[in-house]
Length: 204
Image (tube, rainbow, N blue to C red; front, side):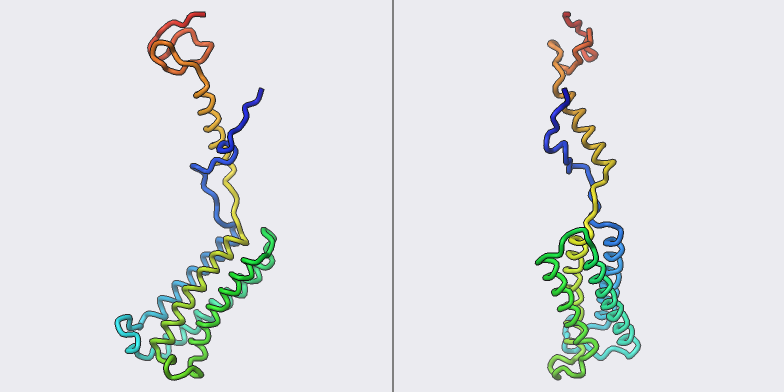
């Protein structure tokens, strides 16, 4: 008669590492975190955190590099949107649309302040406002990006680790069902004639 598996033996979470994302998702994650950190580093490189309004104009070269990295982030967003839309791992639903909208809203805000700051009012076109809001927007855009990748590119359990965990769980159940030695209470097998722990002889 086969042993009935306990629920925790069927899906043993303890000791089992689950890949959060498939390879496509992992690749997109690495690209996203690289571009986000690079943009934040360059964007706040000359930022005056103690007095944002006193932040001076960035050099032309630094501004050009920031523009380039933001452009790369936008291109990444287009690629990520297409990949997530084509992914068939899960059906597109309400949260997919919300997360995608949040990503593009924050990215659009950053683009407005970096690329189109001359059309902004004088109150918010200073370097402190431009780079402060752009940096915060890209950091916020990173959050729905991660949620989208986890949603659309879910990973799978490591099958080998699951088999190992289930086997260990079943072995533990078998051990716990063994009888005790009447002398030392050591678990023994029914076919044994002597206790391996205390040496007591068992009656037939």
